[in-house]
Length: 124
Image (tube, rainbow, N blue to C red):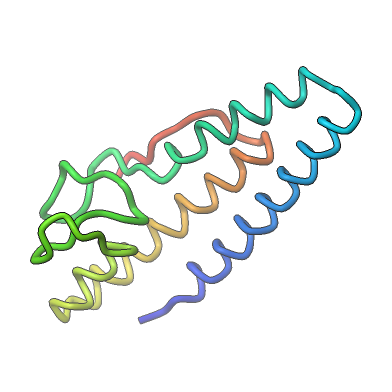
């Protein structure tokens, strides 16, 4: 299992989030209402960047790549559910594919926070 893309995407997202929070603090400090409003909207819609149009493998109705109820946990959540489910089943090919998809969505969220991207949902 190769987690390098996920690690890199998480670092990119963390940097984008830190910068966005810094930008908002600065906009509040300088009373730049337009920038505060634009950043607040980005914060509100960033979560949508983690959605996959095709959903999780075998569970197309669960679209979030970062969290979803576990297969056998009722509503208790699992983190990176596509990766978790595939690893639990010993399906390394799917696990690596899901890790790549999650990394792509995390990178999209980072770009969205940075204002480089408009609101989208992954087509997988």
